[in-house]
Length: 558
Image (cartoon, rainbow, N blue to C red; front, side):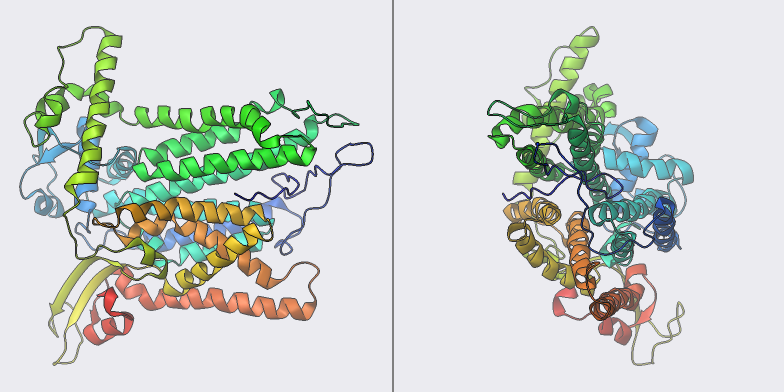
């Protein structure tokens, strides 16, 4: 793993250099920016531009959110699970025909009393339940939280990229790219769990980058005047034990893991990266054996902030399950999982601590069953929209969320020729121009991290690798390309960093910056136009079959 030894910088983009004068004293040094900021002075202007892009993203995601008024793909599971969490505190089974009743507007008398076997943690479903609490169990209600979270992702990405580059312009460019990505757009308008997973992961990484700035700034301030390292010197330790941004990152990682288990891979990967960042900071101070000493001084406390805190948050997210563990034990012992549960049911415990211990044991046994479900029960399953993860980055196989075919001319507003028909489709398809450009930028990110030793590209590579490569192990079971929504923010960060390089730095000539601005502007416009072209199949508009075929560029998209 390669780590740059770049001097630290604070939240305003100012370098708090760890370079030393002749007497060993750290001195500040100017931080190189990729491009000048939108307004060189004025922190508020950055927030104004951030707000403008975020409002645009929110408008697009909330517009006509309740249409189509039906369950899209796996919404049938998560929307109803969220509703039962809201009403019972745990997930219950539903009566036969519940979907039709819900779409017709009837929401009472549909739930059974027995709990249901769920195969994903509950945090994401609780977030869906917030929207249902506000607006009820209808298509707008169960999609509302996803739309808000998708919009907030745009805001978080803008501020993260602005922190990485010191440029409001590049930060807003990243926000615009995310706003006009088709995969993110459709996921933000669907009650699926992956949009919440992506949001929590992005927040966690944003907190870690803020912690990197905060920690290096504090380290620079803690170094005494005339500081010189010695063979036994560790650098500042006590003053760096309290890390509020790492605590926030641990909370966000915990919520991510409490949404889907695959958040464990980014948690582990970024935990190692944080250790390397800290070791690099100590090495810049002249600390010898910096990785080993950083492991003791930084990595062990970081384990508490990231892993232990995440574990506490994860277990807390199962509070509803823990309070009803007895119902789960009784119900699941009479199902196909009875072979696993039969030996787990114990005599009723008395007292708070014995009851808590028994509930935690039951939760552990439940997790074993869920793991068995994911690793064994799905091995022979197939799905028409499943895809191989190696092709996700080039949008090889999108997922059809809805398809109303063969709408005849003259019906439902179909204006097709008499020999043709109309259709509606909602397709989970990333904006191709954006994804193809980001894939090329990913290759450059690997080069820039290794050859240029730019730590920001390391964040991109680690982010993409930890959210993408683990899926290769499970490519023999039904997995879907929309899982790549967690990869997307890191792809856009890498693309934006490359666009900043194309744009030209502050020392570039006017002619160089003119051409750079033209290339970058043309690419962003092309992404927006590409998104607009696919708008009808992102939103389920009624179009003619020839118009639909014009948007289906490859056979694999059908």
